Length: 394
Image 1 (cartoon, rainbow, N blue to C red):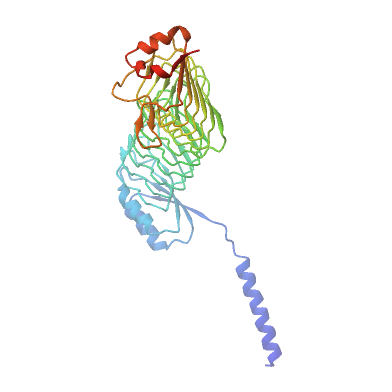
Image 2 (cartoon, rainbow, N blue to C red):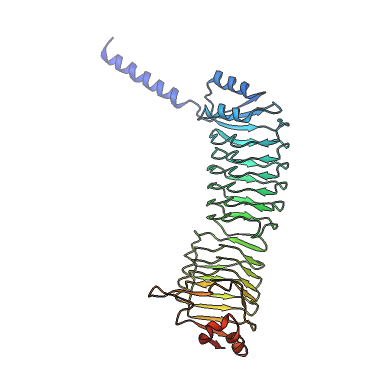
């Protein structure tokens, strides 16, 4: 056989081989299997040496061993599993860590017999979406912690408690509805859910039953009809108007937001909680409306650029350190006829360390203006008298 013929045959064979490879169907296939137990599932997958990337697995055992299922699925890291437990009617809870770090698990259908999703049940798993059934009353601590692919969660109207760190670091989650059945949200429950852009919050939640940092570092302002819980540090605009109807600005609500230079507080607000605007370094002026009756400790502490504060006529009570460490504060206008009470008598209201490192009750350039008819009342008040030399009528 001549060399030319050999070369031609080699070219023809190569083209044929390329055609075979190129024409193969690379579309992901989904295999549906129905198994009675975890052992059946193990036998099926081990015997098949699965090549398909997606499996719909329906369990028929009334009470399967869920931890065994997770161990089996973790042996096959390249497959995606939609697990249907709807027929497992004897299951009453998803136990601690049973699907923790189960990367193959993408979706799960839970039976209506489940009342509790326990601590770490799905933490760091591969879940992309989940619907909490109407039977569940409690979502445990760290239940969905760091489920980085979780984009959709439907919380049923039966849920009353979402415990600490339950959805912490679910960074793909974009929308959230917490129904009115929920009466408790634990500490850091939705901490660092940075891509949340649409949130609806139960009106039964307030600053008393929402834990510290529950909505810290979320991607959107978090509030219901009466309470403002948290403002995102990532907010890029320098102005913000708090929605009308809000009655309470919660603890730490705007803390450490360095971009804001202006905040508009509506006349519906009655209470400004502790540390609400602490370390808002860009704020230069604040107008507190007549509706506010109480401002709690450190509400505007360490607002380094704050120069002018106007306090409405309805204020009845300050707590300590409200304007502490605001060295640029030059003027405070207080429109309350009766001097507001300072609850914590052993602490300061404003002031801080001067350039010499000495603590002072107020800065030398600060002036307090009160209604002209009330100047004497302020200067003779047991607390306000300490500022008598900087109190003026207006």
